[in-house]
Image 1 (cartoon, one colour):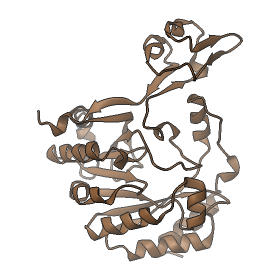
Image 2 (image 1 turned 120 degrees about the horizontal axis):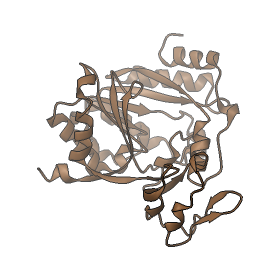
Image 3 (image 1 turned 135 degrees about the vertical axis):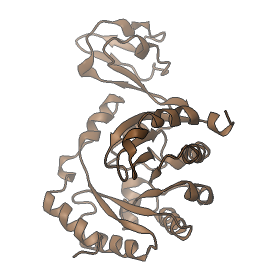
Image 4 (image 1 turned 45 degrees about the horizontal axis):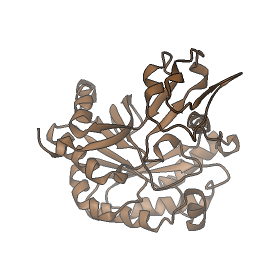
Length: 296
């Protein structure tokens, strides 16, 4: 086995038979770690690069097996509670939980092992399917990402990268030739709103988008739609302008905000931050889709 295939990545999950992470049937590899802190993040467990303990309270059967915790982080009373300050994410509780109420988010996998998992789905990929690397932000682990893309290419597996665009541009020359499709997020085209809701200026993202395009990357833009935040005609029109200015853009996907991630945050011991008022209605989504794709 070559050294590159032995490089490890921190993975949160590998999902099979995905239909919305690129063309055809996909195996999506979710990596841990992201430089942005989007208020609407749909995968809060991928933000931190560190291992985290997920607690699914509704699954808990109250057996007390998790008392194996050496730090006494599990507290039993009327409800099963976790003292997160005592938890070191050693994983002992998750290993003995019979109901899978406790799970570790973030485990190390070698590039070759990830590719082996993807190979199991090869029969379903057909002409267009393959592996999508998502997150978090795949370029948060750049060396491992490029090694994984190279290994997939070596095995004849299709590749896609779902990126927020906020990363060191020096990795693009290596990544572009190994990637069949970039799913490139545009969170917002208003700089002040972007900074407010993601914590970062969009300048680097735009720079990387155009740099990838100049290198010949095939790109599909992905735009989260958050009602009352970026649901305005100026934003839609600017996305359409960006799409039209790219040489290799396949189009624009509009992704409506959903509030499910708020529940996911509670599994990490964080407050439920799902906001139903941010969910756009169907007419708003359709309007954005038409304008962004230059059809209105």
